[in-house]
Amino acid sequence: MLMLPKTRTKVQYFAQICIKTDKRVKMQLFFTTDITDNIAILPEEEARHCFLSLRKKVGDLIQVVDGQGGFYQAQIITIDKKSCQAKVVDHQMGYGKRDCRIHLAVAPTKNMDRIEWLLEKATELGIDEVTLLLCDHSERRQVKMERLEKLLIAAMKQSVQAYLPRLNPLTPFADFVIQQKGVNQQNFIAHCHSGDKGRLKGNYQPGQNVCMLIGPEGDFSTDEVALALANDFFPISLGTVRLRTETAGLVVLHSVHFVNEEIG
Image 1 (spheres, rainbow, N blue to C red):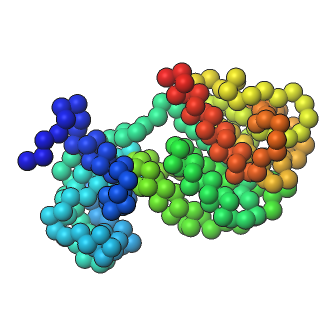
Image 2: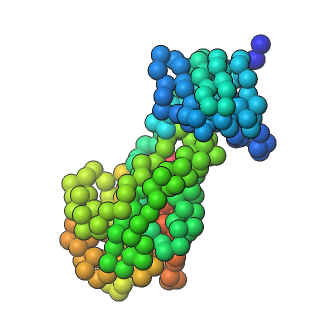
Image 3: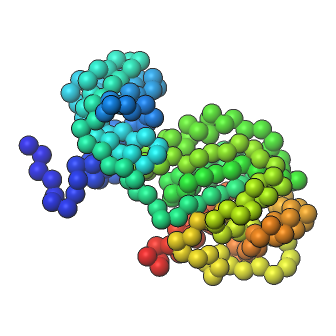
């Protein structure tokens, strides 16, 4: 019989196992939204990986997340290369839940590898929502949403998290800014134009929901900055050097986490 530390649930114990450096252990985390009556049904791609790559069999235990905060310990009851069903034996809801929501709105880069890198690292750090912006100076006006969704799922599993960030499609800048009016959150825009700007660390209030705007390689236009300011977005500087889009996105996200952890 497996003896667990008194202060941990079984789910927490197995989550710690997943974080170990052994790659074979890390990859035992699966994603599905199909969990009904304590039966988790893996998507075909996940089932194939479970059966062919990890050689899991009936009776084996696996860890499953649903992307909505649910972390499940489940025992396989049927499995082949196209399907896998597992009975939930333990679960924890709200696994890794944060006190605040973090929303990053960013213009995709011309080179998709760079924006994909940002989305992957943002998911690993912890983020709730990402909106792709269509700006005056945008060099990319089309994205493959399905590819990005798969990337987010992979990053969520790799970092042993139970919440899948919401990914919104390309949205015109003006539409997005106006939509944020009245939302319960602090709004910030990082830009390189002249004018009075503060620092995120000194103006973000720990524990508050937050939305941050990051522009394309050519920065936001002056009209876009003016529109954001008119809709209660606070202008911030990220330092004296000019950062790439993906670097700026990661800097603001890390800063929010740092402030929250520093106070907490």
